[in-house]
Amino acid sequence: MTMRALVGGKGPEWELEEIPLPDQLGAIRIQVMAAGLNRADLYALGGSYTAAGQTAGTFTAGMEVAGIVERSSLLAPNLPVGTRVMGITAGAFADYALCHPRMVVPIPEHLGFEEAATLPVGLITEHDALVTQAEFTVGDTVLIVGGTSSVGLVGIQLARALGADTVIATTTTEDKRAALVAAGADITINTATQNFAEAVLAATEGKGADITLDHVGGDLFAQLPAATSIGGRMVSIGRLAGQATSLNLDTIAFRRQKLIGTTFSIRSRKELGDVVQALIPEVLPAVQDGRIAPHVDSVHAVADARTAADRLRANEATGKIILSFADAHTGSSPATSPTANMWGTIAQIGYVVRDIEASMRHFTACGIGPWFYLEGVRPANFTYRGEPSDMAMDVAVANSGDIQIELITPVNDAPSMYRDFLAAGHEGVQHVAYWSDDYQNLYDRALAAGFTVGQEGQLGGADSRFAYFETEHHPGTVIEISDLGGSKKFIFDLIKLAAAGWDGSNPIQEIDADLIGGDPAAKAAILEALG
Image (cartoon, rainbow, N blue to C red; front, side):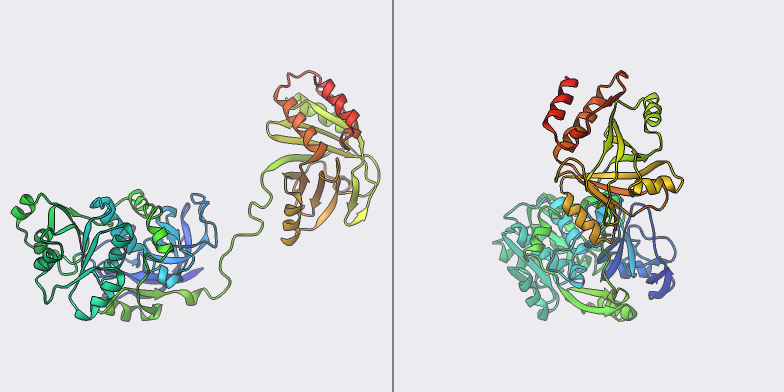
């Protein structure tokens, strides 16, 4: 199968191509519904940046994704097929993307895919810079330089949600001040018309910001030390205005400031996973309750990716530019199979044999026992393919660890799936059995999933029902479910206990068939026999 993907490394623009669906053991495969466009995507396209996980030469572009788990990972049972997720990964600009399970998180219920795709890069960038790198504490004054970028808008909200005392944010466009205020900024500064450092000091009574998160770099960066407090922390996140600047090192030294650089492109998979998972305790709840909200600038079809890129290049966006891949996924959403793990854990392996005593002797010689042997057992209310049947059978059971081994020999001509098995020339494993404390629910789910009952009945009262389903593909593939209640559970517990302490003596013990029916005298007799 193939999919659409925006491929970089072939020229100044992405090429829309058909490429094979990605696959990798341990990865989650996501049906991409929306992807966020970031500055780093443009840098990667131009060859000045290599994203984490990006392949050399040509590459599938994109790093920020929102979609639905289409193929789950054994490393993430908490993210089954059908889970709506958002996160970071290489190759996000495609109909499907592979993600490491620790680099995605569930999408809060109230968010759509396009909204969700605005958040992952902003959340991990700002949380890592603010909390992990700059060691934010409640009551700090936070300065966000480049606040109207998609990441900066998230930073404003994050600082506010985590308890900043004052949030100051900058822009170079007067019309964008309102967006800063809407995001939660207390003070806004237009660095194109105001003296940056003076404005910050005026807003903080001469102290400066405790933490400065800078997304701009360039010449403006030289003013950061003057705008940051004594002992303050400055984090260089982005360099929209350029990589070069000049600093007065005396100012940094005399004010005992920390200057921290950060990037994700050279971090290991484990480090990136740690950054994403760090969002779960405090940040995702803030998204869930609306303290942090998405800011969608515009949504573009995949074929319109160049227009989207040009809008970002021209600094026209306020919020995140989104590429939509939803048109590739107009059918039913991926969903967990109704039968996946439906039955539980196999509790019993059932053999249908012609000579039950010979089978017991064979298993005993192999070290499995002791065997509890019942002759002439007639299940109550037994039906075969919906019709009553007076089936009788000899039954023997023993345990090997937690697995019960059952031997069955039909002893009359009444119809049953056991007799069918022998009549077909088979002998040996006929079924596997699952035991349930909620038998009716499992029975109903099996019928709803399309399984057909071949035979059913009761052994030990109304709470000891069993049913065999018509699942035989080859010998040994019939599925039985059994209600683990009443006298049946009592017997099964005794058999398991006996196997755990068996020393090889008394390998076959005949028990009264009335015990299955819950007869008090039969129960007392076996308890006396077992001491």
